Image 1 (cartoon, rainbow, N blue to C red):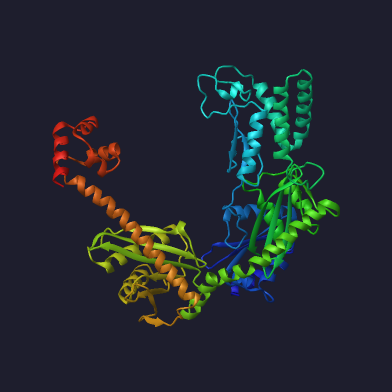
Image 2 (cartoon, rainbow, N blue to C red):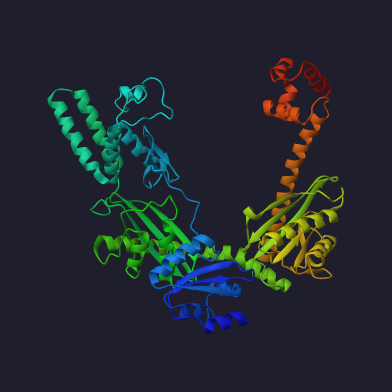
Length: 591
């Protein structure tokens, strides 16, 4: 604990509020709320903690706090601060899972669609559905019952759907807005549990048709009733009422939390969402924050009500989420919450070994690497590699690893501009200078370690730019390869020395991943540039083709291959002058 933190801890107030933890670069890495700021913030720096919390604390170099007038204000402020700063140690909302929804479009002539993204476009969304099959079966049923248009673009004549009674034919008829409004209301009612009333109405129509001896019509009604029963009633009812709800349960083990959300629609459990993440404070508060942020994702449509465990402050959530929040005490509803929590406990038990292994391979590997090099844990590593063919099309690439995992959004490509051909050292000087001049200018985060794909010479020129020109003190390591082009040795120090690492260690595997990734990224960029330049050079050799004509030809034909295969007539059709068309034909025929 540094002196600044000690001084701030001594003057913390007793009020509720939010605290913002910062690392050595001033980046906000964690945001939390507290009923009593003094007690909560001090707790991070006193007593013993599990490994994950200790790792967070080890990165804290400063903190700020904001006093609020109530716990509710602190909760709202916390959610806003997390959304604004996206701290790396706070719960990350997953973006990798999408669910199918049924959408009624907000158009003059509405349509029913299956979508996986919920947008703020004034459309009406229903779901989520457990899978595409369930969503499509429900949509087929609605298409048969309600005559909304099916075509993407309105044609100029009626289609088969009109003759089947499944479309109002806005292509040839003027449809009143009120008529659409009534249909949309019926669909909304149907999807919100009102399909029982539709089934009863169809049953009356079926009996009436049968009495009139209109057996074909009666069969159509019977088929629709059967379809409703098959699609809408195949699942076991979990609750007697048909209210749409989300049911939350959680479990905690060894500093990790698993939260399971059951989506209950029309009284049926149709899908669940599973989130697993490390926590750094009381489980109840982490759970509260998770649920408070859950509906930030457009895909998570707010239901009429949510169920939560009994030990959570439901009034806070109800105020923030603006919906009904219930902590069931007994009966079927309590059983459903308990079931969600039981599933969370099973999930966290099953996945814990895998998570520990993953943690060991990533952050654990960073810690081992820092110990071996006798430097602070390198949580942000930037690595560079050059690529060229006999000096031509020289490029350099940088990859970034954060907490032992690649951060592709931070990757950068560089075309070598000033360095002479075959001058690998000059290329390294140029790229290091360009990268860290920009980092200083834009206030970007500095790395904890720079890894050069090369030996002592490459390390020396990088250190020359960083220390002598830019005044930066960042550890620089070199990676040497053996005769099989495999990662062989880690070099570090001044003068560089070999850092002994076991080839079976996680730190060594991390360096291998970094070296392979930066080499792959550099080679890929070099090939793209080389191919582009090769195409350009071919057309540049043809007399009469300048930059504008070259652009026009590539736009017209799409590739040099297509230009080479083009006939004299096709070139003329592309507005190429006769003389130039002849020149192009002769040039490629010689090739």
